Amino acid sequence: MNEFAPVLDDEAVAVARVLANDHVADVVEALNHEPRETAIELLCVVPFERLVEIFDQPELEAAPELAEALPRPKASKLLTAMSVDRAADILRELDEPARSELLGALAPPLRATLLSILGYPEGSAASIMTTEFVSVPSDWTVGRTLDYIRKVERTRETIYAIYIVDPKTQLLLRATGLRRLITGNVEDSVLSVAPDRAPVTVTPLTDRETLAQTISKYDLLALPVVDHGRILGIVTVDDIIDTMIEETTEDVHRFGGMEALDEPYMKMSFLAMIQKRAGWLCALFLSEMLTANAMQSYEGELEKAIVLTLFIPLIMSSGGNSGSQATSLVIRALALREIGLGDWWRVALRELPTGLVLGSILGLVGICRVTLWQYFGFYDYGPHWMLIAATVGAALVGIVTFGSLSGSMLPFALKRLGFDPASASAPFVATLVDVTGLVIYFSVALVILRGTLL
Image (tube, rainbow, N blue to C red; front, side, top):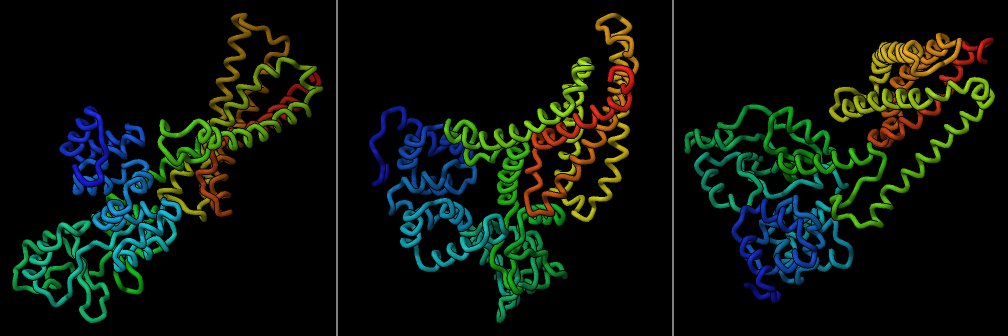
């Protein structure tokens, strides 16, 4: 037990012993399932070295709240011992005055480093970088570099990437891996064992998607963040994975037609969940009211041909489904940089024939459905059933084509306006296509059924 430990019951003490000995990933998972108050009590009784390991895990939920709940001296000591990037993540989420109090208790060099990281926009390379990397002057030998790595390895995010800088200007010259150092001659210059090419770098304001693509493209374990030739820090592959999981989760929530959740699903309070979902639902409901307006415009036609109402759900769902498919494909392609804004016309030329073919397939299925139901006596569509079947088939061709085209163009429009393409949620696309689908359906019906049912 340490000086900050509260009095725990026997069960909590047993859990605390498990936390002190299990794998840190299992410890974090167990803490995430505990009530907040219990988690704080348990964290107060684990050894300090273990506490640092736990808070260094990005998977620890509500880490800022847990850190703030610790006694101030222990919280300050914890931030000092943690990796710089994780400490910055925790401080970024803290409210005042807790953030200022904790920053004020840190050593001036660390405080300056954290304030520098916190000054960059959230989601940028500099905001998730760590300053704990291995860099050596270009005039060192391989042997001296290896000795240095042995001394500092416990305080560095990774030792597998070594950055070589000019001893006078501190400009980044080369990057090399630990394998090259181990296999090199200890008397050789560290610069001689490094690959003879400029290292792959990013700027402080590079976004997370570009970081992930760069690391994947060049198969890197770490990516240096460079400003005017000087290395500020590195972004490691595990940092990228964590941030991309978070961003993907936000996109999935938006694509489902709601605001992104700030906490895990089971941790969200009832009122918070209502707030996240109600706004989008109201907006979609108001949009769907346009569907009623569209149907009112064709009230006379509906009175003359009630049979047309039987196929409204079929028509609306088919258009919404095709639009959602196209939107999903385009949003993913934009995210992976497979296409850019300038490719909108290529996408349109691709989706137009695709929509026609898909609409023709569904139209044929619709015609067969009306024919079979009429032939086997499941439903009597009247003497003009063939015209009704043709109306359904032709309307499906038009609606699915429009759905595919509009669904594929909406992400481009949002991106051009500066919005996240993921905001083109499936419900939003479906609502758009529902309204236009009804107009297409009744317009086709007026053309085909004029003089008979209409």
